[in-house]
Amino acid sequence: MPEEPDVAYTLDASDAIIAVNDAWVAFAAANDGVPLLAPAILGRSLWDFIADRTTILLYRRIFERVREGISPVRFTFRCDAPALRRLLEMSIVMQPEGALQVVVRSVRVEDRPAVLLLDPAEKRSDAVLRMCGWCKRIPDPDGRWMEIEAALPLLALFDQTALPAISHGICEECHRVMMEAADDPVSAASGRIGVGALPVGIVNASAVTNAVEIPP
Image (cartoon, rainbow, N blue to C red; front, side, top):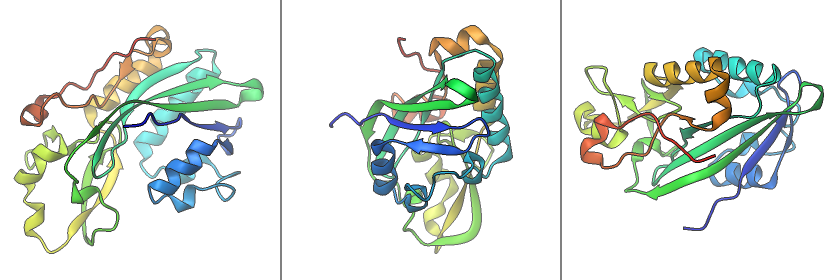
C-alpha cells in the first residue's frame, strides 16, 4: 500500500483553522468530508467540528500545555475507514504568536473486511452507539470496550432493519492515558504516548493494549 502523505493544518491563537495542506484536502475528499474542504473551513473554529465535550476539554488541555512551552507533543490514535485500520501519530508544535501547527502522519495501515457500521452511506436508525474516537473501540452489552469486529456479534446489530448512528467520544482508558500525557511534560514530548494500538489478532481483540511505542 502506498505511503500516505502527512496531513497538516495550522490554528491561530484562538484555535481557528487558518491553513491546511494539500494532503488535508485530499484526505477530506476521499472520506466524504466535503464540509472540511478549503476554503470553506478556513477561519472556522476547530471546536465547531468536535461534538463531544470531554474530547474538547482534553484537546484544550493539550493545546494549553504546548503553548506553555512543551513542544512538540506527540501521540498516536486510530482513524479507521470501513475497510481499513489506520494508526496515526499527531504532532502539535507551537508557532509564533500562539499559533499551533498540527501534523498527522500515518504509522501503519491494515486492510480488513469492510465494516458496514462505519460506512456513512448505510441507513441509520434513531438509536445511537458510542464509539471511542481515539481507539475506535465500542462497548459490548456489558460495557466492556472491544474492537469493533469482536463486539458486533455480541450486539446483534445486523438483526435490525437499520444500523445505529455513531456518537464519537472517548473511553475511560484513553481519557486516562491522554490526561496523563497532557500532565507529564517528559512523556508528552517523547512521542511514546499513544492510544488505539492496532490489534494483534481479532480473536483476542477485546484484550488489545491501548499503549503503543513509536521511536522518536
